[in-house]
Every structure is written in C-alpha cells, then in structure tokens.
Length: 322
Image 1 (tube, one colour):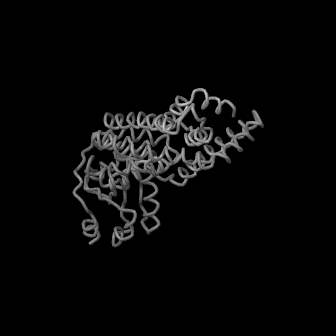
Image 2 (cartoon, rainbow, N blue to C red; image 1 turned 60 degrees about the vertical axis):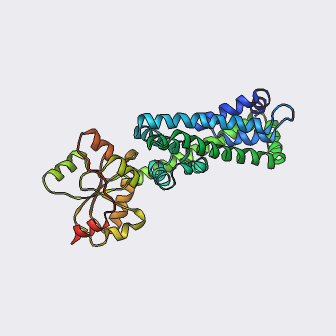
Image 3 (cartoon, rainbow, N blue to C red; image 1 turned 30 degrees about the horizontal axis):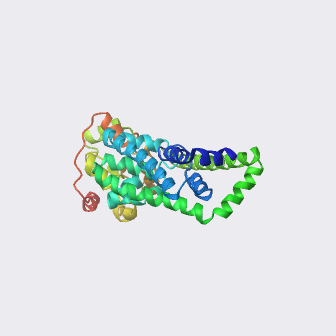
C-alpha cells in the first residue's frame, strides 16, 4: 500500500498518467482508485488538481487515439479482437454499434461511464470513419468529465479515503493482499459470468457452406441478421437475410411458419448474440433454429456474395408467411 502512496507522491503526474493509460489501453487495472487516491492525498505545492486532471486526460486521449487509429486502419477486425477479451462478449459489439449508430460521436461524452463501451466506442469511431476533429472534441469532453468525477470523488471523501488507506497501510503486506484478493475476486466473478453465458448459448450451428448450398439450391431458409442497421448498411448482408429487432421480435415472428428452417447470424465472438436471439425465437415455438457458425465474418472469408441493406424488412417477412 505504501508503494502506491509513494508512487503518487514522488512520481506524481507520471504515475497517474501511466495508470490511466494502462486502463484505457484495455489492461485490467482500474484507474479510478488511483485518481481518487491522488486527489485525496493531494499535496499542496507539489501537485495541483488541474495538473493531475491534465495528466489523466492526456493519457486517456492518447489511448483513445490509438484505438481510433486501429479502427480506422483495421476496420471491424479490431472490434472482434476487443470483444474476444471482453468479459461481456454478447453485448460488446452489438450494444456499442447500437448506441453509436443512434447518437454518433456525442456518445463519446458518456462512453467511459458505460462498462465495456469505452475502448470499443473509440475503435468504432475509427471504423465508421468519424472525422478526427469531431472524435477529438467529444472524446476530450468525455475524458474530462470521467476524470473530473474520479478526482472529485477523491476530494469529496478524502478523509474517509485517507483513513481507509492508513488502516490498510498499517496492516502492511496484509493490506496489500486484501486489495489484490479483492481485485482477483472481481475478475474471477466476471469470468464465471462469461462462462455461464457461453454455456447457455451452446447449441447446434449451421456452417456457412451449408447455408450457401441451401440458398443455391432454392431451399432458402428464413435468415435473420441481428446486427445493427449501421453494420448492415456498411457491410451488406447475406442474400435474402432480413433485419430483426429484439424489441419488436414477437411482431416480426408473427405468422411465420414454426416448422421452417431459421438461421440467425451476427458479427460477434462465439456467435453469442445470434445464439441468444435464436433461443428467444425457439421460445416462440420455432423448432429448427440455428446460429450461423462464424457469422457474417466467416461468410465473407469464404468469398460468398453479399447484398446491400435496403431498409425495413417487416413487410417482406409478412409476405414470406402469406
């Protein structure tokens, strides 16, 4: 514990800068405790609140600019990489796309406050070719807000924080062990949640080759694309695929033959979103529902054709059922 306080006192701004930078680059190191402690242990004449704020914001912008550049250069590949290490693989890309598609660059104002949204949102901004000026403007404002709240909490509760810190410091190695064990328990709990999610999503998949053969032989199944409208517009869709909106899912399924073949696909690790929607569709009485193994990325990798997204598909779905 004393090492942390010494680091803040003697290395000051660099300690805060590197701590925030590591967090924003994706390492499992929470930056808020460092910000709160830095504000609580603020030493007049050595470090100012403004200097600590500037160091933290600079670190945040540097990391975010790296993710933005990666997204702009590598496209959706960087999003897939981010979500493979995410503790919430189901919501990672889809929820970020949904929020960013709706609010655009201004969503960066709150990105740091939404678990799993920060780094993905900055990479998404690059992927969707958000202008650099717009990205920097909103990301900087969001970074200032996120950092200011962390520092503000530290100043507001500085007496309680310093008392707790002194107690842990008195415990010596035991105090440090308590913090390490606490952090480890959080990571283990999140990992367990991820494994539980993946276990619930285990179901038979259909390969892209099998789906392609069905389409080519005229045995077209009902194919649902669960990605956001923005992703479908940008990349296109599997021929004959239709959008599905989870909020209006029951209405979109109404009237469709429950015995027909249904394929659901996404662009997410382990087909998590597709499998989750597939289970919901099965709960509506559909007997043959399968996620597409590898999703849209595997379809593209195999060199199969895509078609442009043309908008709302509910009317078409109702026509299929007629």
